[in-house]
Image (cartoon, rainbow, N blue to C red; front, side):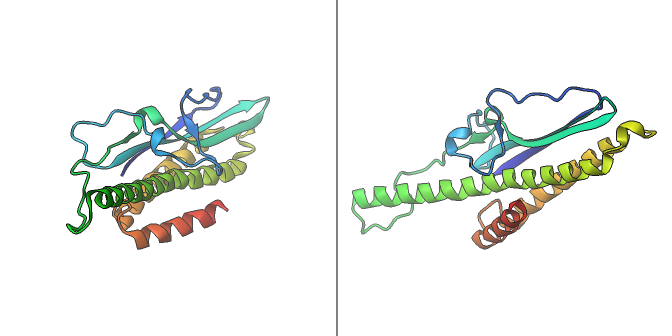
Length: 197
């Protein structure tokens, strides 16, 4: 349940970089799945998962006009999911039959997976909230290509957005206990969903 947040900024006059072949761009219609986590789990990993989420921001002057873009992306090759170890039986009561215990353990594992997926998805959603702020701020720089200093202030704005993203991701993990605190997770879910709608 750890997040790696990176903000990549391409300087003025640099062409916008394309998405890596397997990179997933944030979309309202597509949610992360357990199968999206394809990276190798580090031997010393203590968390249940890690999402490699980036915000790619690019801008350039084209015929005297600012052309800018930003997007939130998820990199499956750098994101990993660790299946919990331990007994298949979990902590189920001794009075259950073995088939009931197996069903309960599977149900519990599915619930844990869904809880963790919801947590990781919200990390991705938080990145999209910051992307939308960056896109809105680009409008403030529509004349940057014609002004002294050009697009320099855009770089500062992107650096500030990166700091905001990292602080927000850390606060999210801290307040939700990395998704374990269901009440706090629900509160964050509602707040971020409201910002995205």
